[in-house]
Image (cartoon, rainbow, N blue to C red):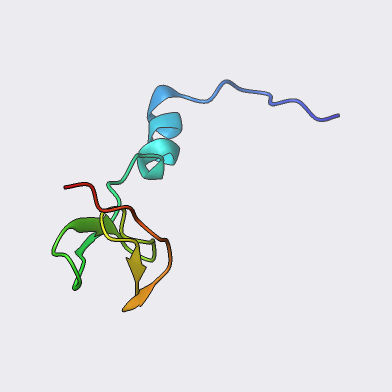
Length: 61
């Protein structure tokens, strides 16, 4: 198995790692209830996805 002949410098390592970062998820406003939810996911408040009910939610008043 091949092994590296020279140690990689800190600069070279850090240049490679510039794209390894956490990104915030894209959020959207639910057209049904107006709450924020993650794109392409069911709204946690009302249970709707793309205008149709996906999860039955109990309304506690």
